[in-house]
View (tube, rainbow, N blue to C red):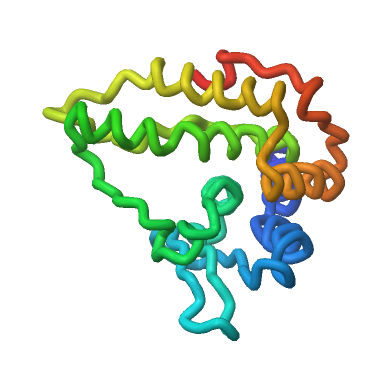
Length: 194
């Protein structure tokens, strides 16, 4: 029992979301006037109220995975989207019907592929999220097509390279977490997305 608890405490210190906040600040705070912060019930991107203000990228509570996920959204959002509340995305809660779920998965495949790569850069376990646990009519959605879409996007970025901000963050994560991951040589498997 003591060993398991000790490992859990060590993991929580290793994967403290505050480390991601510091890496994000080093990479982006000055140039993009954007701050990554936790402590909220629901993630949210809030553009600055004026030209002198700071944009806020909020992630859920102190969850490491949520911080990675919200950063992934930010890293692929273009300049116009970064001027919109929550990047202009819509959100439908659990219980989405099939067409709503397909729209969700289409919008989420790139951020989740990037979150997966960021997770690997940190040595952190990634969990694919179809984010519709209640499903439609009580049916949990089949996420195998979604997993394949995420996998294919990650492989595409391996071959072609990441978007500029994502590449900067990925490299900073490999240094912060001492993983020495090289994107183009990193083995990726669909098994990780099950």
